Each structure stands twice: as structure tokens, then as C-alpha cells.
Amino acid sequence: MDYKLEDLLKQMPDLEASDLHLRVEEPPIMRIHGDLQRFTQYPPLSVDDVRELIYSILTEHQRERLERDLVLDLAHEMRGVARWRVNFFYQQGVLGGVLRLIPALVQTIDELELPAVLKDLALLPRGLNLVTGPTGSGKSTTLAAMIDHINQHRPEHIITIEDPIEFVHQDKKATVEQRQLGQDTVSFAEALRHTFRATPDVVLVGEMRDLETISLAITAAETGHLVFATLHTTDAMQTVDRTVDVFPPQQQQQIRMQLSVSLASVVSQQLLPLKDGGGRVPAFEIMIGTPAVRAAIREGKTHMIYNMIQAGRDLGMVALDQYLADLVRSDKVGYEEALTKSSYPADFIKRCGEYAPAAVPAAEVEEAAR
Image (cartoon, rainbow, N blue to C red; front, side, top):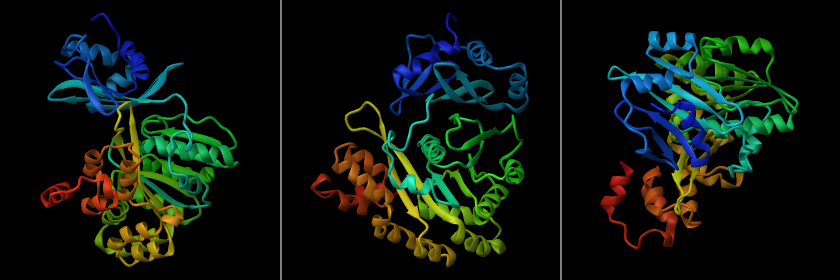
């Protein structure tokens, strides 16, 4: 093999590739603007080729962890090029990996063209802000932009707990400390328990994975901290229900009460390809913790949240279907592509108006709804 892993990584920024996949019996594969492309100018990788590429960027300790645990998450940096979030793993007994490109610089909310209300949410004095969406939807990028907004505007103490550290924040007005699982702490919950002794104003939890972490994050927001965290949920209603359902039945009413007090916002996002190619654009659902939303959470009436989001546009709230329809009407995203991401297809079709096909068969709406 006449190339190294870093030769492939150096190509990614110029190709606007987000991910590099290494698989046995396949050439290197890159995800470019959302689509996987096989680089057939390279021969298929053998078991030894994949191992050689992967081991070339690992320390001896990291190699031992990979061989012991059969999976390894880390961050890799090439100075002057970029950083990567790395996941190496075994599948069907052979080694493989995915490396996701992280831009060298943290982009601002304005540069990313994110909803302006995220600036207001970033500067709240306290509360729990959840950024949700499927893997690869841009949650980390959105959170980094919100943390950067605080860093630019407030002289506060920010602590992030990540697995691994992705975007590196330099001190501006704020002081930022970033802790990485496996290197600086053993778990999110363990890090959270000890973090509050360092008197942070803002805490970012890379992922709320278990009951203890969720409980600690809610309590932190209740007691006056501004907390940011992620979940793999698709909308505000599902996020509230999933958070509550993690707890035993006898605790769920108490958690609803705590969540109704502490939840400041849920920002759910999806990524869609641009209609004319050349990139992707995010679509958002944004719920803000208004008194009506808090009452719905407290009383277990989460089915009412969607209507509250639709009625709260003046406050910065937006339903995913409305955001998708706006993208279609502005000709940024194709109608069919947006329909596949819709939460309520019939509502989405109605919002698209004349931009929707003249006649949409009922079967198509039902199929999209599934």
C-alpha cells in the first residue's frame, strides 16, 4: 500500500467530505454532501491494509484499548488541516473505522445561518437546552456555535464534557475547560458529579446516555446552571417523553415536575441536501419553555406541545414541517426530499401550498407518515 491514512484525511476538506469509511474488501469511502462515494482509484483494502491505516495514528495505549474493548472513540488532529472524531471498531471479526471531519474553526450562529433565537437561548441565565436529532445531523456544530456565542459575549466559566472533544474553544470573554471521556474522566455522570465543585456557569454534556446523567443534568439546570446536552430524538414531544421514560414509573411524575421547571428549550434538527447540490442545509424544530409548554410537561400532556410550537412563532418557536415548507418555498430543498423528513406529512403538504404537486395521492401521504 503506497499511501497513509493521513494522505486520505488531507483530501477531505478540499472534497467537502464529512466522513471517511474504512472497510475490508472495499476501497476508501467518503461521504460527500450526504452521499457515500467509493474512491475506486484505490484498490480494495485487505485486513492488513485496514489495520495498518488505523494503527498508524494510534498510540500504544490506544492500540491496547482497541484490542481489549473491540471499539475505540478518540479525536485526531492534523495541525493546520483539521480535527476528526474517530470511531474504530470490529465488525464480523475484522477491523473497520469511520472518521468524521471537524472544521478547524468554530463557526458562528450567523455564519452557519442558524435561527437567530439560538443566540437568545445561549445567553439565558439558567435552564436545560437540549439539541436533538439523528447521528450526523449537525448537533455538535450547533452546540459549538452556541457555546462560542457565550464565549464571545459573557465573562463566564464554561465546562464541556465530551466523547471525544470535537471543536476546540479558545478563551475569549469566557474561560472554557474541555474534558474528554477516557482521558480526563471515566463517564459523563462521574464528570458531572465533580464538575460543580469547579463553580461553572455553563455546562455542556456531550450526550445524556443514562438515567444518572439525565438526572444530574436536570438537577444542575434546576439549581441555577445553564446546561446544554444532546439526545438522539427527532422532535420536542419525543424528547420530553424519552427523557421521562428513562426513569422508573414511581419517579416519572417527579421528573415531569423537575423538567417543567428546568427545560428551557428543545432544538431538534435534520440535515437535507441542497436542491442544486453542493452541500446540505439544516431544518429545525424549536420549542421554548413557555408557561403553557411547562404546564403540558408537568401534566403529562406532551401531545399538546406540537400545537403550542405552531402558535409560538412570534417567540422564536417553529415546527419542523413549517421549517421544511419554508425551505421548499425558498427553492433550497426539493419537495420530495423534505417530505421524507416531515413529522406530519399532511400538514407539510398543506403548508407547501402551490409548491406541492397538484394532486398528492392519499397513499403517498400515509406512506410518508410511516
